[in-house]
Amino acid sequence: MMNTFVIAAALALVSTGKETDDFINAASGKIAISTEDLPSTASELGKLLKPAATKRDAYRVEGDKSWSFNLVAVLKREAKTPTVHVVFYDKDDKEALKKFAPVRAVEVNPAAHNKVLNVPSIEVTADQGFVGGKTYIVRVTELDNNREVDLDDTLLTLTPPPASQGA
Image 1 (cartoon, helix red, strand yellow):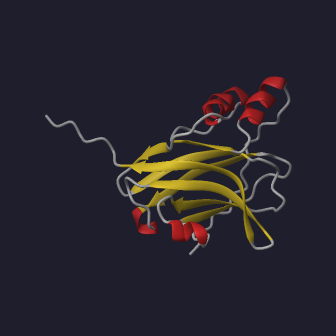
Image 2: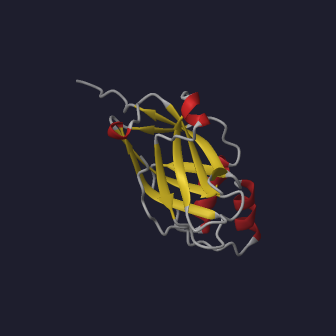
Image 3: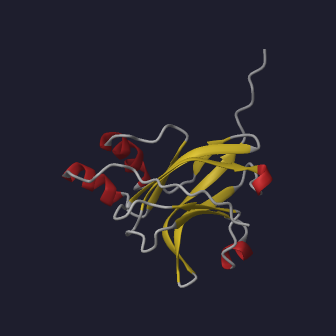
């Protein structure tokens, strides 16, 4: 079952200078995941996206049975449809990947003519089927003739919080 959030969210940063274009172009097709507040200026966005341009390992988010984070994606191209989805696939579930059956999907309405997608306050939980210690493929997709088109992707590992340091 698809969980749906309708978020009229796209980062209100307009690419006006070469420096902004450089980090947006370098991060094209990439997703950045952070537990910190989302950027509100071009320089903050650059600091978040610069590592995403070359990141190969999974992002890690700590939690017990609930994991919260923010997501920024620089789409490979502008979405053709008014709605895109952030989908989460269990990396080890090959059958679900074949059938396009994500653990969860979040519906997002990006701003028109904007390749930067900002999705704040995503929460995934054990009740939704997520498991600590597992790695998930996170994709931004759109449907084109009932076919899922991948606009961005990354990996996300959900980890338990660090053990409390007892007295």
